[in-house]
Length: 337
Ligand code: P6P
Image 1 (tube, rainbow, N blue to C red):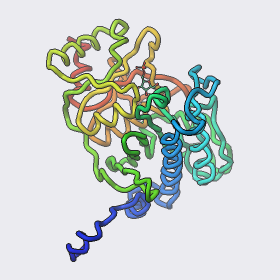
Image 2 (image 1 turned 135 degrees about the vertical axis):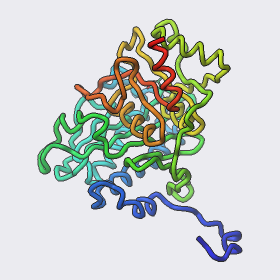
Image 3 (image 1 turned 90 degrees about the vertical axis):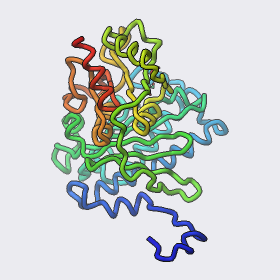
Image 4 (image 1 turned 180 degrees about the vertical axis):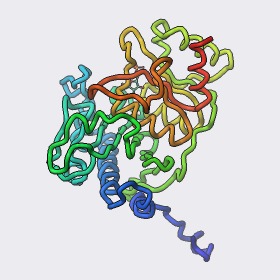
């Protein structure tokens, strides 16, 4: 803080960079020996590169379909493949992650960093079908301390520890601005990317979701597939004159609700009886962040809190109801009415 306000007037402080913030708060990180700090730097670096690729997509040969399907059976966009390569390469070169589980890969990607303490589950580019129509998209990541022995390759158990074992999680939103939002279990912090300087700057020192809100986010095209309690809840939202806001890009809908309050719903449907969203690299990280911001993330009546779920396989799905605490609470209460 300058004691000479005139200086601040003629030379505005640029703010706190991600690097300075990480160094300042490193003492909060479990096992604070710098490895987790480096891991977050590696993710931020890949995020900067992917942000640049996305912003050039319309001009370069990286828009459109890649011409192959991923393990989910979904058509890969070229930027899905590019983002996957960028994050795996950054995590490999950073040296802290011994393995990566990606939505775009069938199984574990071993980085060769067998002494690495961490594993990362990641959706390199969620909502990529929106790329060609210039709608916001995002990266979602989840970090665990490995349970397999150092020096050996990572195992399935490293990735199937369950939501409560995450030590850090977050997302990068490639929107009107690019933002990195994450938690290490000590609240939620947000950084906004200044591309002219190539730096993420602290813009949201402590993100807290409003306890309630007037926005519901879901694909009402699935209305006739929804369970009755979901239809009853949505009807109540409309009677209350709430606003429907659905980008169709999870990170965009989630981030807006985190800032202004609201609820995101991806219920079970006939097409996706266990919901559409993936547990390990979408719902777990977003549940960790929303709970750290004072919100709630549930898998639905009878399925419980997302963070309590114990995964059995890498690409399993879960219904997801997340956002303002009182809204999720109200939805769950509909089941018993
Ligand atoms: P639907 C994108 O494919 C995604 O995984 C999320 O980003 C988004 O919220 C959801 O699926 C959209 O699915 O069935 O509404 O098109």
